Image (cartoon, rainbow, N blue to C red; front, side):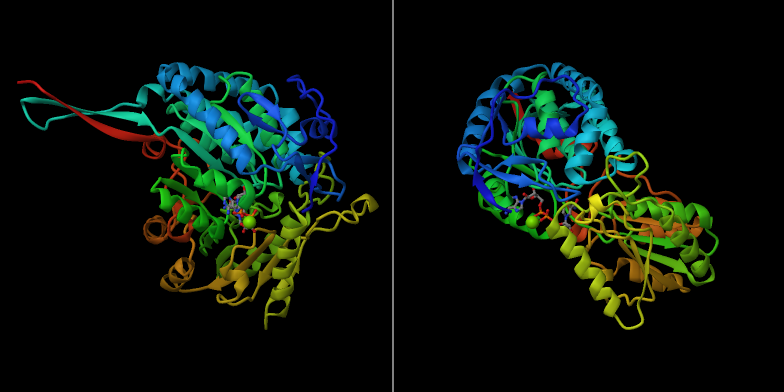
Length: 508
Ligand code: NAI
Ligand code: MG
């Protein structure tokens, strides 16, 4: 992407009134960070273009760098002092107010995220905008749970532990579900008494900024800030900053490892939510129609497959394989690809030209695999307005080898592989034969088999006969290369956003 010194008119920041014109709102939010309670441009004055869906430029992100990181960290250090001294339940009250304010903006946020990311409004973007508040409501009530312990160490001593905030937390987020993934990081970090600096993904900074602007109308200045910009220029200095005491990251394995290594130099804790290649195992006794619906949801075809938990390896028992494939094809064929803002659209566009080429590369590779059968579903939109749009028809690959790179690597596009199986031990071994371990689903009415598989599947989030997405209150996170640490629960808040101090009083 091109960086440029901007000639944007930085006039007034947009008002907080709900604005249902996403084009106007994208423009008004352009080129800004949220630092110290103000929407400000990058210190360098540089911006970058945001051009989703139809290929037109819809706005600009502020190109943050180390100078912006310094400004934000200084404001955070200052603001955190009084924030951490506030009663935890009063912090919770403010988070509750954030949730209410965000709920008043659901339609606006849904429309803006649809425009910015190309995710269809009805099936994805409005849904994400409306579940965002839930993450705040959940964490808002946890203030009284920041408890310590009394330790029966010695009768002459009173020994207690207390939970203290870490200080300044850096939260680096991706573009696929930026609002929800951000909320699952910032709500617990703030409740625990930390100041938080979010670094948005360069593909999707504007709706995140709007959420931050809304929260900023409720929270004290500096407690919560947002920087936009690229990974190496803006994310890396945030991780490396000596006053940032914790980093929580969601994104690729490759970048997660870089973040982890940088954090290791400072010996600070890190939470990593990384990629996946999640198996879905369908037995011959499963309810096939339900399993097919589960595959459509699990593969996130409505999100162009851009999900870390995508059911991108589907193992179907030989006896029901043909029926499953035919029904899945029919379902995906019936999905409408088109304008993300159109209510009729099920499937929108891929996030960026880079991601588009990456996905196309995998599909081309798959076509050349000996024996592999690509089943292309749905149809490209006919409107000439979308001739340069980043649309990819969903592809279901059958008869493809377990060792194909399509079956091994995270594609992050609307591409899934279906394998045939007959032997339970073999399919279990194949499901676990991956570097990832994020999610898995099992589809059967055989209770014994379900228990056996859920016990043996190497994944952090395992479901039987359903395919729910991440929910506040349910521990979420991976094993193996899918990550480090869990999110979305009380325990995760205590473990990742506080440290435990032991205090001993000698009574004699
Ligand atoms: P990425 O992991 O590079 O980006 C995620 C976030 O990290 C962004 O905010 C980015 O600016 C930031 N970042 C990048 N380099 C950094 C650095 N050196 N230090 C600190 N922060 C840095 O992911 P990207 O490039 O957007 O997508 C590449 C692939 O990653 C996708 O094709 C997909 O396979 C996977 N991915 C997985 C996600 C998940 O939810 N697990 C989300 C996004 C991407
Ligand atoms: Mg990257």
